[in-house]
Length: 340
Length: 272
Image (cartoon, rainbow over all chains, first blue to last red; front, top):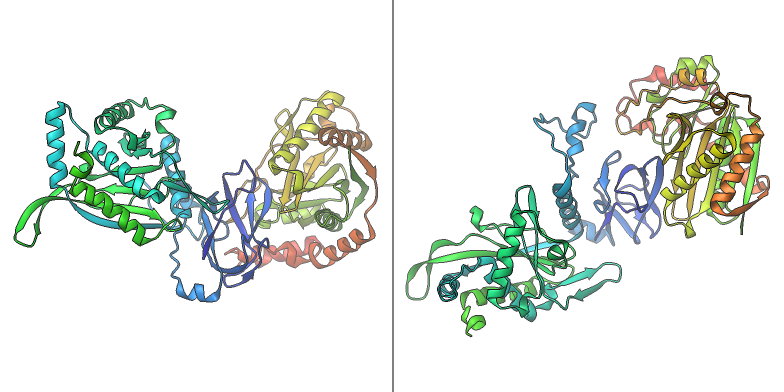
């Protein structure tokens, strides 16, 4: 089963309107056969089937505009695939859809819109990237609870000894970078043209930072080669620059893995969207005091939930679980990494 | 230098057949049966609507009847235009293997025509992405179809057309009906009006030829339609362009379609 995406039929094309589906759901199609007509700027383009198969599901209806890269249909290899699969339809939602509510178009629901906001600048970029990621990458999420007792003790010890605050994200970056050396498949990208998984040589950890009108992801380059103190210093600088909107292109470039933390906002668990062209992302929830049972007793301990979201084309749940367990084990026994 | 075929179809012809010839040429070029082709042609009074347009939003049927203006649905995108014998139409069928951007082709055509007209007629001609204007008034609009193997672009040039009839037969409201592609209303003018003298159509034909040859670095050899193309065009006209079914082919999907039978009756009368 594969998604058929709105192709970029012309280098300047940003979106296309489905004018007509030339094939019905359930029809057999051949590779290269026109399956739909798309209008872009007074030109009618033909969209072709990317492979032989069956047009399992039409996702975007005639008359609807969607951005390049968004799913428009599902192609199945066989009829058995269609009966096995549950295809979840996610209609494309755009700000323009709300503007069209007065046009009387039958597909648009009648919402009372108080305020229209245009997708511009950073918001637009985030919207485009996240839509592309969500539509093209099969996301799978797994979670693990971590006992943070030892890590918090270690953090306190470091801060006393070094006389400086160590951002929590610095500890996470150091630990994740170490784990990525053992599990390089999560520090990679999928080259769709050549169908190759390319493992990055560098481990550059992106740290998601919330700013006023969106999100930025500055990068700690070569995180596996830097000490905790170095990483802490870098991250403090990046946070400061992010708040002042002074991050440079160099500081935003070449991330190979991203960590994102909503714990300070009180979020326990969440499923972040992979930051393309990466293949995985780690979501960090809040640390909370919870009673937990061990063999002998029940104790209140600080626990935190990690969520690893990965690209299922690149790897499977078992490998992902091993990687996440590695991170958990390092957090529960940080002495392994920081004994010196 | 590459050689392209030039077809000069300058008799003012029946508009449905003229459109059938356009599609026939696009198919033979796409199939590599003939070289890339530049065609210049004229059609009698007609409104030519885009493949995915709503007829009701584009034409005034009573005016079409009064001014004996037929309605033709073409096989390319874009908005409605008016043709009469004072209009020169042109089309370019290019195989796609060497083309990176179909947008580029449109821009090349409008720029080339504007440049030549400016140089040779002294007119302030401004090329747009899909249109050509003089003093903010449109003299030409382009539309096209792109497939895996073909870029097909055609356009019309208002040389000495009857603008008064144009303004009566076309609705020009920019109204968007349901999912259909709306026309963008714009003031239009004739080249003859702007230049302030009578123009011989052949003068414009020569300028068009020169523009395309220079812009694409090609030479032309003049030829007529092949027998095969003629036969294909005849079949397309019989089975498609002159049929009421093709004219209202996109209307079937409109929620209002079943309701407005009177309108459809009037449209049927127009093309008789």
